[in-house]
Image (cartoon, rainbow, N blue to C red):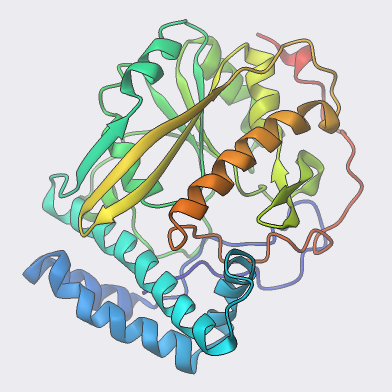
Length: 331
């Protein structure tokens, strides 16, 4: 059962992220889970998941420690013995997300009972014709939950970075299907900004994760989150301002085995006359982070950032803008 892997070395350049999406699982481990799911569905894989989670917590301290930055802030008064239980539960919850994702891909059908709150709100802002920046986070079933947006009749673009050598399959890859979304690689020219702007100008949807930077703290601001200071990217709001597009915050949580709920929790409007200055965008980042904080407080075991996002000096570099102004890149 995979967890996100930390970078192999400490970041020493803007291109080196503090986190990695690459799985720590081996092909054999993945294959065993996939076989159980094919033979008996999601329920068949859950007992093994509990055993693997217990192994991680008791015998793999390097993996267990990845849960602690979040858990120690979400449950600051928990004694050491209880943090072991909290880590175990968090790993199990993450594993269930991955099991659901694999089952969804293998069946060819959506095994989730996915409900969505805010459908009309999303369609309404999309109907304004300026595109939509769909701001999500590593909460709940963010990957399979995107499949519930098939009612949107315009292309959906995902800003997504996939690590070389990652063996963890997305749900559509289990059946050899093409990706239903258009992928924009943040490692591309100007971090994919031009592609995102072009999509928004065509009235399309660009989905961005709002709780991780893409390898450079230059595009982040420091804000308060769960009692500490963490860095969050302001680039989604910068793109929205340049395109004149609204930002729709969409979060999800699992409600049970093979069931989930998606929710449009906020619509953030960013003025288009802001200067190219991180502090100009900080109030909008803070609004998103407050929404995220409320959400993970309500669903404490479904926040899956397995690295110390509060260690703001881990990849510290001068916060300055060296890229061309997005305002000068308007299409």
